Image 1 (cartoon, rainbow, N blue to C red):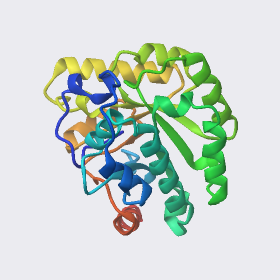
Image 2 (cartoon, one colour):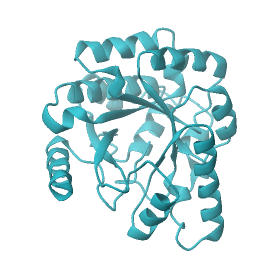
Image 3 (cartoon, rainbow, N blue to C red):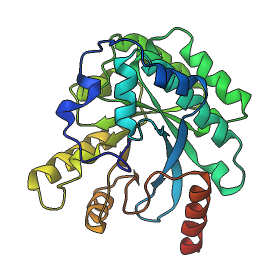
Length: 276
């Protein structure tokens, strides 16, 4: 879940997804926002580093009551609303993208999926039904599982992700390298891609250890036949390095933060004009 447009450089030790899930009572304000469809979905482009072509977008949740995506999901988690919030954002992203025409209609859509989604009976059918209802081709869809979101039953998760992959949905591990389950998930889950977290990229230009670690991640992904997406690219020097090492796509302020539909349309058109 890339939230660089609004969140500060992360010290992941305080990440809500690593904290105990303790429900702290009701949050009536957030409950009303979910019920009244007051959440907004923005989109961050995923770009080929060598061509500058936009090939996909990640859907990101926004709400006026908690404009930081990480803080929003942390708040939902504290009050037992994380799964409801996740489903609402997924549904809204599919419905928006399902109505797109022209160049936007060719873009892959990445949506964030939490562990509770995968553990819920009927989730895969629900997701595919939502896509079918709005005419969204599942072959254009990627589900991103937060690497630090602890999946209690990895075998069950693998089976359910396998059903999605059977109809063309791709699976990515988000925030790769920041949690405790990286290697276990690589071995146990059916994957198509990893997303290297922005925390691993921040000191890439000046830090020899960061370079070694990121290069090792990319080599490992290649050996496993996985695509590599890099988050948090904010400088041309960072982009040059990850492009040289063979990453497939990047996201970051260097090109664009989270965009609404009109901004996304203009951004895609501008990149096509440059490529021409």
